[in-house]
Amino acid sequence: MKYSTLDEEEIEWLELLALDWQLLADLALSDVVLWVPTEDGGYLAVAHSRPAGSVTLFYRDVIGDFLRPDWRGLVDEAMETGKPVASTSPAWYEENPMRLAAYSVSRQDEQGTVHGPFAVATVHTSVADTQKASRIGAAFREVSDDLFAMIQNGLFPSPSSSRGGEQGAPRASDGLVRVNLEGIATFASPNTQTTFTTLGYRDEIEGENFAEVIAEIVKGQFDTNESLPLIAQGKVAKRLEITARGHTVTLRSIPVIRDGARVGGIVLTRDVSELRQQAQELITKDATIREIHHRVKNNLQTVASLLRVQARRARSEEAKQVLGQAMRRVAAIAVVHDTLSTGLSQIVDFDVVFDRVLGLAAEVASLHNTTVHPHKEGKFGELPSEYATPLALALTEIVTNAVEHGLAGGEGEVFIRAERSDERLGVEVIDTGTGLPGGTVGDGLGTQIVRTLVEGELGGSITWGPDARGGTRVAIQVPLHWISAQTREMPSVQV
Image (cartoon, rainbow, N blue to C red; front, top):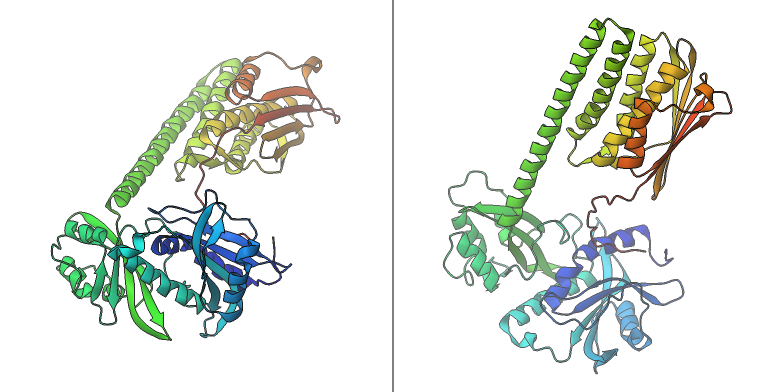
């Protein structure tokens, strides 16, 4: 849905902001909702995050909901004034009373010009909340106040900085250090203290220069990043990792700016040792799987070569034909494994595989003094390996049969049409040859193999019949009920 009040730059800014929406909710210890104005003068919720470790006031996401009339005055005032607005009496959602605050959202361009406000963020805090009384709760809320003030002035998020939605990004609950203008840690959460203890630093972090704390941890390392001191002092919006004693900790710094000047910063910390170990294990696993596919491909190609040599030495034409068919079947399987050996997943681009299958058909044509003109229409798309192998074998049989028997000794065309939807894959193979003997398909080994592959392994259907132009038409229908690997999307603003 598009809104006349938002331009492309504003939408991109909100998408960046939404990546840190969970961080804002965790720091505010409250539900936070992002509202954009609509063409009819209302407001629509496009992002909503609940606080980790705190009670939510919403039993369901409000994304896609329009602003409640009783919250309208607060949101309008924040939008018009560009200043924070807080309710003087409890606001309500269903049966839940809450304290409601609203902050306008602006953006800053590359020249430092502030544009906006063009959206509003609301913070919903339970009236029964007691976390503010704790030292950690107070520190978290002070940081969230700083960030929301920066949001109002277009200073957060920083387009060039790392995002909260990135893999392994530190969260507020993982660890937080607040530093002043001189880089002294004025607050360090218990989780940060624990994390740095595992790195070998056993003294208190608070009251120390955080850059010097980190320098002591990485002392003696020659590959440290030159921006590490700047990150530790909260001078730049950036993220990097440090490693010590077998542990890896990621640091993300966010400078805090008030009245146009930096007054300090926050540094989020997270022990990502387990994540890095898992990532390394996955890399090793992927490399091992690719190597297995590569070796299987090599072995299959060796078998195919042996069958080709044997076919050439065979004395009877029947033996040559049988060995040649076996060679092509093995080669078709090798093509799939060759494709899998070059990728990072068990998904193959079947159009690439099929192009190589056509190469096998061309080889058959040359052996039978046949001139074939293949025509491919449509796309097969990506298929998992458990589909790609039987389909490649089946199409190898069908196409080579069209060349070997339908066009034997002559010249003609073979049309391959692929039509794919979310539910099925349809494939037609049509030749302009002599047609089916007697008008019906035989029951030879090739036909049995194709039926077994399509109906048995792919759960599909296959039909043979005459084509209007005199040749043969083979139609395959394969249901695509497999579930592909899903990548979790980053939070985004849908406008």
